[in-house]
Length: 602
Image 1 (tube, rainbow, N blue to C red):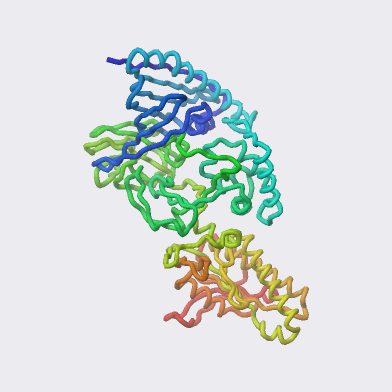
Image 2: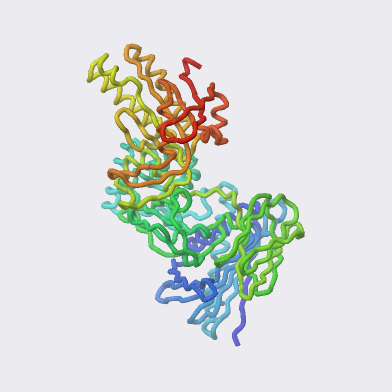
């Protein structure tokens, strides 16, 4: 009978526990840093709808096979991980890491347990596993302390990848194109240096919004940088279909027209539909000609891989766990790793309500537990992994809805469209229609060539302002423009900037002023491919176009839907407005809206 062998390493940090947790609980980075190989995961659904995870990895001349037990953790406090080997000199390997406050800093206890399969396994545990674990833990701990004290930029430093002459020339050529583009924003060299120096875990799925936050740059600038970098050969792009439960990308395609209308997540054992605004994400990887990224996992279900998950704890059938943790007031979703019911809890502080897991329900106890403890009960006849996740977590996903409304995407990726006959429901989009008033008279008054020049100039500044507000011009119809935005306040801010620009434009062209009419509305619509580009159809589109028709020259007409949006309302509070209500062609009842007159008339 084998014996469970264990070692514990203790390290005190001057840095606060929250910072040390952020680094050491990032188990993917930790494993890459200490040189563990990537492994392939095989997911096997079970008759009870749960999923088992089997892994394979090459370690030198050896091939390792094990069952990966999903990690458990209480955010900021502890995490543990088990691997059950299917063959070889070891039966299992367990890691438990605990974080405790101590003075102004914290103490971390790193315990590793090994169950050998025989004498060789015992020798490997003592001579290799324990020795390497101790060396690696204290080396990384030194790096984390230096990072927390702001002595180094990252707790996991890497040596920049050295390129040979051919690859270096290729990189410089791509950078030249990127820097010459209007979408580079002077960030090309920064991107290239990061691609060559970042950990591989960062490069497997590059998210521009996360990169913008890390670099402290404008989101639009970094999104445009990544889009242009694909065209210039620095990056490759892919569309990911995310699982709404675990947020993992379970299906990826190179183009939108290859993306199916739904997918199945083997990890959660659930099927789900495609939703442009929620679970279709555009991500990036380095181009293989610059830096090849190997497929695989450094760690499965690590705490910092899903930072919105505050608790992930396995509870035995009929058992209960009192988990030591502190949850901040807020809204939480209670679910299990396995398919099953969900429950939303709005927590105001104090004792957290006791949670019970049943097959078809998650009842929440009226009684509150002790402050600093969460009680989990499993009333099922099978083990359940209980998850408590914060709902206010800001995701870094660049959704298809957001990126396809951006001018840079429509310019650079005009060919990336849906399949013919395919359509996608968009839950909410903000649309702007503009039209030149009296353009026919303008041509007659100043002549075709000068008038055409003014019209082209008007298209140019419209496109520029729409782009600056994270929108995109969908199409032009004669002298009219249709533009799309993800958020109503972006559409409204763009309209106000356009109005101001037209005022200044007319002061410079007093002999040939233009009158621009704008209409704004927001709501659901359908995205389709028409004439080789992404387009939008539905009642929201029709209403936005009709509201533009109600505008007088120099005026913005805003729907009540836009005006009711909190962020847009904050902008409108500083504007002179007139209330109006008119019968509008195509709509059975009169429509209420707001008029924002020309600035000179306000």
